[in-house]
Length: 588
Ligand SMILES: Nc1nc2c(ncn2[C@@H]2O[C@H](COP(=O)(O)OP(=O)(O)OP(=O)(O)O)[C@@H](O)[C@H]2O)c(=O)[nH]1
Ligand SMILES: [Mg+2]
Image (cartoon, rainbow, N blue to C red):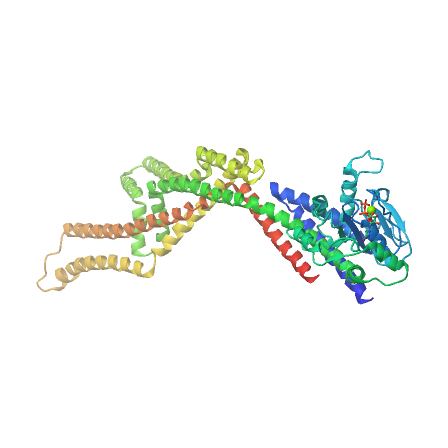
């Protein structure tokens, strides 16, 4: 396999890969108006690409384009080296595109409709690597005069994109003609343009002026100045081309044709792709600010919904803190196992039960005992239920969801923004928003329960450090020890051991000791629970703060946000694609 063949295969692979990426990109378009337009643009480009793909095997296709009488047909004849295309003084001479090529090629291979063209085949050396297309003037009407200029124009529009090189001819008189330039603008994407002033033997050189008129829109490069009639005669007499005409032939046959033809076609395709992508980029960029403001509004509305819900949950948590404190105390006691102070905590927790336990002592008969059991059972059950209800209330509030009026108002605002951004109405419809809000509320309720469980666990851990624990244990044990020491000293030492025994303290002292112990326990409990309570409040505040941003309403307007995200991603993918096309263009 020659290196040229390999290069050809590589070229085909590159074009195929790029085409499929362009296709994938355009078909990943989200339901966004500008993105849908981009898909349509890219679909049209794909059509052109398949035509280009067919022509990759064919010689370079060169067409002449210009006003009537500017010498298009004469130049084609000069390039072919034979009088094949009709040229003459009657205007217009050419009314249908004439294709001149070597034998063996077909109109289909070139991607052309054979019934729309005049087809000439001749075995000429000049046609080895060139297909010449003699075009009528865009303003020309058909010979029968009936169909309007549109027919010629329509044919030209179909044929020009199939050409690799467009030779734009003009004369001293016609170079300002805007009609051709307009047609050019439509046909130019992807084709190489070569500018030629004809009638060099009789007209003044107006190339500088012409360049001036061309320059705002095209980069004309070198403009050729040729005498087509003389060039044809010279070729027919077996002379080699001279001067400007020779330079033009060299450009077409050496620089553009042969192996370079493939490169030019690839460049043509890349130009087309770049231009299509550029047009898509312009559209998307125009529409992107509206998407950004929709995104910002979603965040803002979410923030408002979040703050309202978080505020409501905060006040519920703070107004019914008792069950949470109980739960926290229970956890603390559980972590500390069976130590004196944790025993005090457990007793404090079950203090209501103690009061009723007093009744137990007064029960004299099994019936009374059974009655006490039932009453106590019902009381505990009620307390547990009440505590559980209170603890579940914030999650219930979350499940009940966001304030309906606020949600509806947000919906109306977002609907307006979505319409402005070109997103489908369905994503911002009330039904979608409500469904999103319900899902969001449920997931927030789950998160809320987990957050609260974690908060209690964290607080329990924070307040059960060894230092805190030993402080309270030592303080309790110190008081207990002191009282026991005093009572023990009086009982064993003072009243027994001493020779002059002191009187033994009466029940009063024991009651007083128990009283002080109780008081001490309450003091320690008060200190401990006060710290616990303060910590809990702070932790609740911090937790609520973490929801207020937009966390509580994270899933609300999810569908709308997803549309925005896809729109932004679509634009980002375009940038990557554009970068690749530019990189390939740089390689050509
Ligand atoms: N002297 C001279 N005459 C030329 C030259 N090129 C074209 N002509 C003459 O100009 C007239 C018009 O040339 P055509 O080639 O038919 O022009 P065209 O652009 O094909 O015109 P339409 O087919 O009507 O669009 C003919 O009589 C040609 O002989 C040139 O370079 N020098
Ligand atoms: Mg002609």
